[in-house]
Length: 403
Image (cartoon, rainbow, N blue to C red):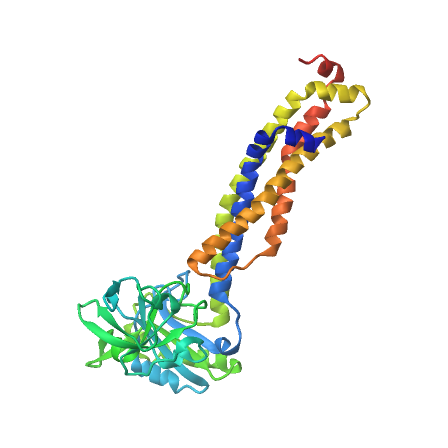
């Protein structure tokens, strides 16, 4: 009888469930995108990444993404001293090269990020083609997004021109293209962002005067320990040096401090940030579910009024209060469940399209699918309780006389 009533008012039932469909779809899409972005940025922790310590100088107590507010303070002397610490396998500096654009043939683009790094950064990296550059050479490595941003895709062996912010241009040979979907480390962001990697020598030029001579200074360092067991001793010894006898301590602003985070700590920080953001936007989506439940309650109250005489006949032939409650409650639950079942694939489809657009692998939080169905049923129950109770309280004599 409940299903027959829903089918008998197709347009009204469709509009009633629309709020639930949109709400469930929004929750599923946002939860799926949140899990996908989190998986893309965080990835699996293990192997060599467990031995990495990320070092930068930033405002004291600042919360946010790793490296936020980092200042260029680490000199080549600091890097050599850190490299000499027992248990350190390598120290990889990282800096940004200011550019006005990149030119390949007759095509110029202006939205690439050019990063100065050392060849050790590519240890263990997967290349689609080619290999890492050599220090001191006019060579570059591109990620897939950078290689495909021109009218014609860049290949290993091609030459591109890096247009510096000061107006000069440097021709560089492309020696490697990284394998597409993954980003390396917490400072990379999404793999869909075009990024060009250059050797620190000769491309990186940020320097300051220290002891009467200009020295290159870098905002970020990655210190790789020889094995996971030496990570903590290396970090302690490294901080002792940086906070006492380094060039960095004399260059950093007074209200700044050193941050030396292991991969696991940074991943937890990013995960907490993403969970907070996902929870916030998901909470906004829940508003649609509240609107949907109000719509169901409204239409059920209308249905009770329309079917007053039917209720009177049911009671006159022996229907009890619980029978009437069951009739209207089941109808409300079916509307909520229908909205959840239609909203779930809509949310997955939306997440699939957006994940493809921002180039992150899709990760399905399966528990949210069960939550969506449960929410649909709960919305139906909550929205249908009062109308069902109101219908059950109808006096059969008054109902039979109702016109």
